[in-house]
Length: 239
Image (tube, rainbow, N blue to C red; front, side, top):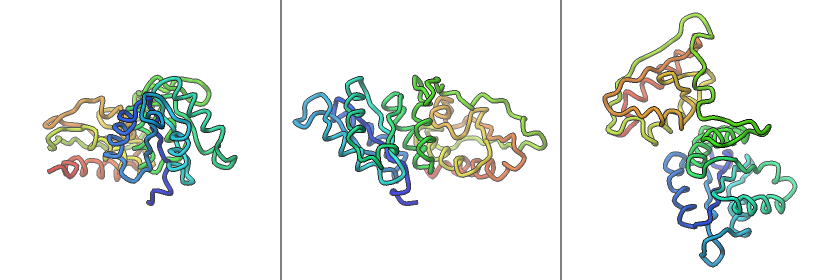
């Protein structure tokens, strides 16, 4: 899938170093997504720049939309002003996510890399905690992760896998896990947590030698469970 088909991500910070650092981190897990940094003022001071934010939005939004993450209040004001000055046809495709900068940018980037649409990417960012959906309702990290299995009835495929990669389900393997899970329509869980929720998976804290249970309450989810189990058994290509 080309970058032009993916939702882009913009990181707005008062610090150029912070913005570029967050982008570097997110790109480790979402190499095909346009993730643009807009940090600091035009002359390198701490602050925000309308021109930098505007340019980053235009660079990130290539037709599928863009999600903007901001660090402090005045960064949000700058981003809102930049949105006001966008072309009328582009403006509806750009959204500011109410989310923590680092966690939100990573979650949004992985969701975009998985082919999520604009709404999906915004919700992924806001699931990082402290955010809210379009109706103003909070979107907790645990959303959809705590729903009990078994609702689908019938045979529920599951497999247990002992992690062999040195660092367990750290950021990069977790991102690979989420991207693969997102290619299947069925709900799949890992240790009861939504396999499509990057931050929830990372919060499990599972390490090398731990055994995880991959399961689906959908009888048609066997292929997804097998694919995810094989990815974990392979060590996520880390050895």
